[in-house]
Image (cartoon, rainbow, N blue to C red; front, side, top):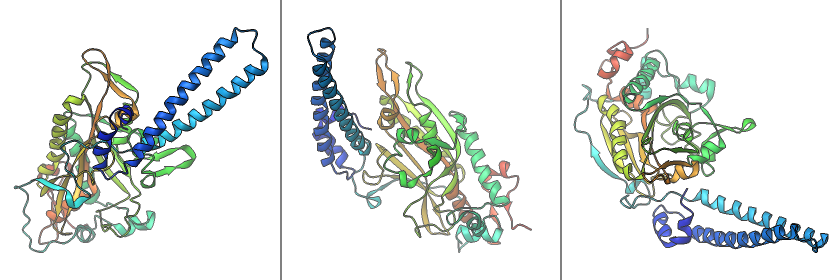
Length: 414
């Protein structure tokens, strides 16, 4: 969440910056008015409380007067609590400030390709088939069976398909484990934790909730990994903190019916390796560049055709201050597939979660958080099956995955 002090001290700057994301900045005026009301109500309440304390020692004050003062204080406390609830509702709704150098734009059409690969695997094939056909013919993907047990937009991996998914995860963990502490966190988190990371309250419709226990299935390991740092103050020299988390992730994909839902392009449940950083603000840009390189490395190792997209302010989402997407080319589907979002959140999450550090003067400061998808398996599997398909219907295994797969080629199941 944004620093509330800025609403009172630099409101026009906030309007300009947050307006770049298409947010209704009139809500900032409402918030400023509520903050002023709160300030006045708090001052009045403090005066009444001081009066109550003074009356405690004054025997000349009647019981009736003391009771009336008590009731007045109770009414003001209730009014103050209502103001605070209204402030919190608006405060949690306000998006993060975009970086000053983030690209201005309304939607994905205004995004900019900033880098593209030049070296990738070239299959000896003229007519590429989509991965759902390749997987079905090899009997390694079975969407019909997945639909039978779970409904639409779920995946069932079989045989070499399951091994391929597992190989991707294992390779990603082995690669990222060189510099990130590996964590396997819980796959369910509280509402409080989802609020810390900015997934609640605005995006509740995208999450799966277990209402009886106030627990939610995680949409990404970013949530428990970042939430684990909540209410922590790091001593000088303890930052940066790097974490790598492997989880199964769950997303409702509300409103996506019929939109790129064939095969593995968009599913409700998927395996993913996520990277999270907690850093000091002055190091954020360098850490973001480093994180982007880490997330790109596996795609390069797999020799998939890739490109990096710099997301504009209207497409980067509420949480991000700056965000890049890594996309891979799926020659069978004939489209680019997003396989990683890499960005920083500034102090947006850390302020919600109270993640702080002590600077060189021992003063407490709010940290910055970053995250990126180190390996989002469904679309990477799709791109591999389409890119590495052979004229005889088999699929060549990318060289870096062969030690984990135990084979060089995926053949039809006998």
